[in-house]
Amino acid sequence: RRLLVLGARAAHVTTALSSSAASGISAITGRAPRVVSPGVRADVFTPNIAARMGPPRLLFAAQAGAPRKRLDDLIAAMPQVLRELPDTRLLVGGGGALPGRVPSDVAAAIDVIGTGELDEVPQRYRDATVTVLPSIDEAFGLVLVESLACGTPVVGAASGGIPEIITPGSEVGVLAPAADPPGLADAIISAVKLASDPETPPRCVLHAQQWSWDAVGPDHLAAYEAALR
Image (cartoon, rainbow, N blue to C red):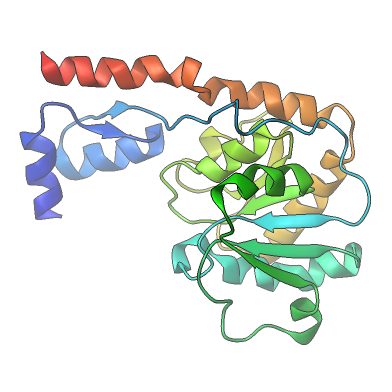
């Protein structure tokens, strides 16, 4: 904490990935950072604009072994999801191992696909029904924006910067209560239904455009220009 304060006060420019992260940094350091969001490459994360039909495919695209990503919450939500949608598959990307104890019915519905190659990632989003990120205190949530750019709706925890992506009225995904597996299961079931609406994929793509490099690039350049001044 002391090093963070010293670094933020010594820097010519301090940045944060979201308004939520900026508030946290400001509270700790006394210095309000610029919000400079990450960008998504629209030429790489190209969309599948077809409605998501057939057996639901839930994509967890974060680090499986990182406790803050809350894969354990998603696994705890799966029995409820499988009761409602019994043919659901959970695709676990990223690195790391599954939590130690996974119920047998849930384990039978999981495909561990690993990190894969970089050029495989966009197709994973395009093939998914819903991308799920139940992280706590996530500064931003770039995997959600990448998924939206590919036309796939999302579920995220109402924590950190995620509510700045899944915004009220956007109809591109569902916010779940943080650290609440039953609430997460309800959100996933609702998002699968949303994914079957033909209007959802184009809406996701349009929503993601606010984080294209054409949109956020000027903020990055302005931060560098301020530092140089």
